[in-house]
Image (tube, rainbow, N blue to C red; front, side):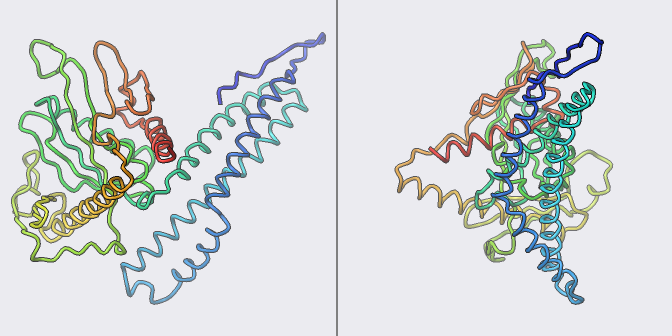
Length: 389
């Protein structure tokens, strides 16, 4: 929250006292958080969520629930997600109430150490409430979906391929930090180092809404580890983010519209997955879209996964065409989502900067290790501002 450590003063008897202004500042900051949380509760409507939880719990208790496994998974998944959201709101409300008591008791007892504890809790509580507030800004049609992410090396040769591998690790580490499940569908390795491309899913509600602001061209500036003359190299990698399709999307892919090819999985040698023609490549003939999957053990599993990726891309294609029509009707020139959106500079100085929001940090190592929340939050707020103009 940016508040300073509690000021201390000593009375003539040497007793440590808290200044009134420090207590007032912390109470004012807590009141701001209380108002923010109340606004979030108004938007997320925990009472309605509790009613939905009761209904879903009744469905989950039905003895014939698992006769239809797809429906059973939808019911249990939605029940778990709603319960998690309500628990999160309840926990934050409890922390706000407890912190008010903590500050009051610390003031009454003139306990500087307790007030410092209160300040630390205030800071942590502020970060947690801000993270939840970001969720209330995700109101797009597909924002609640899981995310399907594709990373491709672009200009820059082997450095670009290495950069693509760095970005893949960055997003997987970000997911790991938050406890989000991931599944890698396909990796195409470059000859010397790094990746030509990789496609993976992040299986978490609102993953698409959060990561959609990561879409665009990423730029890396560094001394190339692949240049024996130690020259500075600029390389580029592209990130595409799509919503994962659901049964309600009705994306029909007739068998006659696709060509299915099988091939031997690529990757580091010695893996058992490389010994059979289990990898699948699907070409959607009407559009020319090509997707592949080689992560699963069997050809059938890879085909099913590749079809899910194809459906997501067809869904995004339909959404993009609809958006283009709307922009044309409104005379909107559009925006530059596909253009360069972030720079990672490792030489001659250290900085990562988002070119849309101007959010920047001076620790690229932390960013590459998955510390992306500041950039994602700034991107979500920026996108909301663009939509309100």
